[in-house]
Amino acid sequence: MVKIRAPGVWRWFCSLALSAFLTCACCVSTSQEAPEFHRFIHTGSQNVSTSSWMYDLRDAVYSHSLEDITLPGTHDSGAFALADVLSPYPDSSDLDLTLLLEIAKVYHLSDVYAIARKWSLAQTGNFYDQLRGGIRFLDLRCYFNGSEWVTGHTLLGTPVRELLRQVAAFLEESSGEVVVIQATDRSARAPSADIGALAQIVTDELGHIVIPTSSSWKQPIGDLVSQDQRVLFTFDNSSFFEAFGTVAWPDSAVFEGRYTDQDRLQSMLDANRAHILAEGGRGKLDLVYYTLTPRGRDIVDAIVYHNATQSLLDLASVANAQLPTFAASNRNMMLGNALLVDRFMQSDVVDIAVRFAARRCHDNASVRARRPDGQDCRSWWLAGSCKDKSITTQCALTCGIC
Image (cartoon, rainbow, N blue to C red; front, side, top):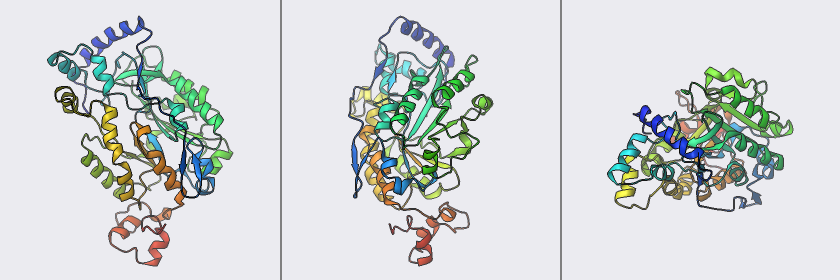
């Protein structure tokens, strides 16, 4: 990811953007796609609804924990509608404003926002749409805009309260589903950021259905459903964690996995292949980022050479086209506990995750994590030891017998 090199310039530009936004009520732009989010997936034995796939597959899913399945997830889940307002406190996940200004100057482009938006919009539906489409992992990036908490990705977006209200509405309709939300504080350097207000939003909208920290998120999914503890909400800023009380889990206690940070398809595929061979199964939810990250060269090439890849959504399509092949070539591996994509509606991520759950194929928990001593399913498989019946009994997934 490109790091911000000129925060002073950024804040100056943001002040102009904020002034323009406050006098314009029509500045929010979304992806132009208008897909039908809900659909049915044929698993071989039944048609499964994307809005209720966990419940529909309850015989296969409910006896297992979140550690045993792959949740289809969206990366930058809130980047589906973005206003002409730049984040006043950007971090390394945001585009470099200095670079954008240089590109605009060199190529005589008057609308920096248009460039930023093209390379920041990552999804095509709000949280309710995404959940109805089968997504069960949401990447919630929280920015404080000076008066309220919103989502964003370089540009600011939808109020967090509105999005969490959508999650609650979905779960009210689909009472057999469980959702994981990874919230990250993208305004940690903002002196006026009111973490208490963010915590109150989470409590107001989801407090009645979260898995409290006094409970366990490692219970069988069916138990979580029966207790109406159907949202695992995490937060990453430990400095303010106490403000959340029991509604939010520490991010570091729940997740593992490193962002791939590649803009070339083969490099991303290789990085994720290496990841699923080495990681996972260590008592945390393993995140696999099946995404491409734009570089400055990608933006310049789009402008100068009019490449087919003209936006982050286009870049996502390049990756998503290869996801079925990637999943098939790694059919005997878990693709993480959450498989995150951009532009999920043009991806097979939900189909792949749902069909994996329907297979009822798992390794024994005691040997599914890669171990230094080589006494684990992946090491045995790589060594050609899956002919041993005692190993296939423990490693049904990795040895490919189901």
